[in-house]
Length: 290
Ligand code: CAA
Image (cartoon, rainbow, N blue to C red):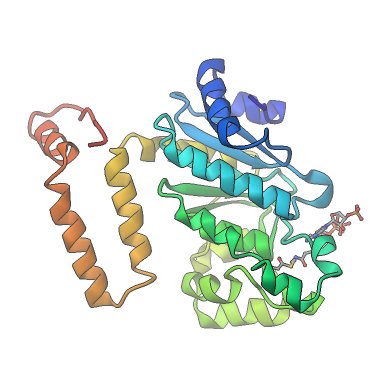
């Protein structure tokens, strides 16, 4: 198990068994990650906490970090002990964007050939909910990664921005596409055209972050949220995520049809039966994930 900073360790209140299990799962398919830390958090240790850990470069999202992150998410998605995932950085920075030093010497052909940033989209293939707990700079690719998560909680010192225009490029991992879907055209245009940042409260007001917390509390609050989500049937949680995400890909009538069919299909699950039975019997449901 790779432990995080002492404060986060205490905060997460992890036990060795669950933490070891989680790390073993991560290590099974990847080399031990160097640029992220993974641990089991929450009272039941059923929330996976991923900390981006490349502090000297402000968590710049180099190829190795993104490989580690996407491989870890894939692994956590298969791990039945994990009900939700929290992705965070540190108190100074979530991530300052794609690694400019890594990109600086490149030309069109190699960046096109390697499909730069395409692999980042694997984050969105994760079926379990991911909560981004953002403190400090959340810029460029960092903001794009946060937007690939399902819920953003912001610390009071968080700043969001798409500053690519200032370094002679444009957002390449969803900034011009996802940001308008969160904040609308006008705010997105202003951010992408000027490269200027918005603060945590502006992000909340614009719909980018759902809540703002003191910076020292945001990770804990994200973990608590993950715990509340993990109390529900894992099967139904994934269906909800799939259905909400479909709203961004479909027309309203197709989306409503998709949602209705998924709703109908819940009646083929044990958990739907158990959930309604438990309600009628005034007891807590026992989920099977089936
Ligand atoms: N890539 C690589 N290294 C980075 C980096 C990045 N995106 N952001 C910061 N760093 C490095 C700096 O080079 C510096 O390294 P050294 O100590 O070795 O010099 C270290 O992190 C600390 O950075 P600063 O000294 O600049 O710290 P600061 O507090 O003065 O400023 C900052 C912080 C405002 C975030 C500033 O670092 C900054 O503007 N960073 C770049 C932000 C940016 O342009 N992001 C977009 C990248 S492009 C992209 O993301 C494309 C895409 O859509 C996929």
